[in-house]
Every structure is written in structure tokens, then in C-alpha cells.
Image (tube, rainbow, N blue to C red; front, side):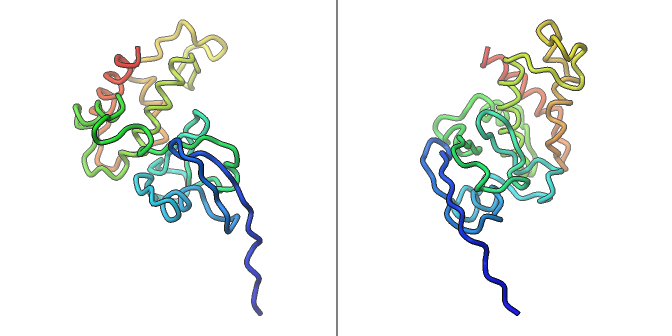
Length: 179
């Protein structure tokens, strides 16, 4: 008994500033589309269950695990991967700070960490509270840059090598640049 493949579902979006179109299997994850169809290998497949954060990308300004969403669900969205944050000749503030502070060891989680940190800095600038924030109704007066706050906000991105202290130092430097 053979099954017919699912009907193609088109989706159009922008990836790293470039218009892009997905036509194909509607069950394809955003992660697999980015890696296999677009050749953007910075986004890593770690656990493929949304637990490690290696596949973190930024969609419409919010960080998401690309393994947990379908490419067709991003129709009309702006998607940024680590490749879209900077270039070898012009690193983003977060990329430069990760290099300066050795915010990586093996490097496998680094692209997801950098995307997450980039979006997190924007969240902080907007005053978004977190679980650690003292007052979830008014985060404007909270210390949004404590180590505890930064660790909580980055807790969705795991590093098997344990480079967390260097990552926090890198994030602090990138926050200073952003100010």
C-alpha cells in the first residue's frame, strides 16, 4: 500500500534580508529548510526536540527553536540566522564579543547562543520581564542585567562544554555596545 506525498504548500519569507520561497513538503521543519534547502549551516541540529537551543534563529524579532516549527508556518516572516547577523569582515556586536571573551569551546552551540543573545538584548531594551524579574507587571525598574537575570534568559540554550561565564561576559560587553 503506497501513500501519496503531502501536497506542496508554498510559503514566502525573508531570510537574512533576502526574499525566499518554500515549495515542498509542508512537514519540513524550518531548521531542515534552512540547512538543506538554503545551505545555511550555522543553524545546528542538536537534539531536534527543542531542548538544547542549538537551532535558535530570530523570527520577526523573537528567538525560536527552528526544529519545533514548520517552514510553511513562517509565511510572511522575517527570519535571521547567525549568518545574517554579521559577516567575517563586519561582525555583529554579539559575535565580536563572543570571540573577544572566548564565549565558546567546541562551537556547536555558538550560533544558537549568539542568535539567542542578540534577541535577548532587544528584549532587555524593551523592558520585557522574565521569570527572575522581581515585578512581572512593571520591569522598568528591575535590574535586567544581573547574572541571575542573564542566565535565566539564556537558559533555553545549553552548552555541553560549560562556557557560560565567558558567554555572560560577552553578553555584557555586547549590551554596552548596544547602549
